[in-house]
Amino acid sequence: MDDGYDWTVAWSAGAVVSTPADLAKWMMALVGGDVLDAAHRRLLTTPTPQSIASDFGQAVASLGAISGGSTLRWVGSGLGLFQYEIDKVGTAWGHEGSINGFVANAAYVESTGQGIAVASNFAESDSFSALGAVAVTASGWSSRPFSP
Image 1: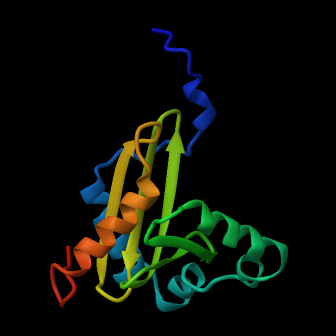
Image 2: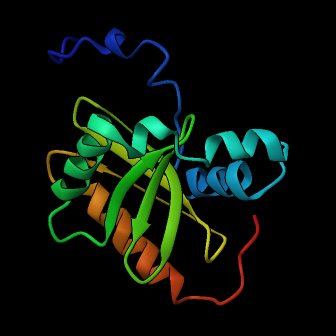
């Protein structure tokens, strides 16, 4: 079948096949759990100077502005994870991926200890804003962290 897409372009980037619930659990384990030791977790969750300063920092600010009225903004990058600020919730660490019409976003919210994730048809929705909306909604569900 030829659907017009060259699916080999993703190489290993498209190798994760999962559900948003599983991605949320993974983010909880990766950032808030014991998958990594403390030193490696710090590498993931410490913004690099390049991501918060100089020309790249201006690019980050521009990317954060793209979200329009979203409650979630990209404000920096650690080594492998993006730092988000979510209105009325706080800092989250996550990652996103997309390929030919599909996108997934997942994050760990520090203040609530929650993992959140969304997956969508990129052409039809703004999953970045949706992730922020999920974070705000989920922050009101419980005052204590959920563990997988």
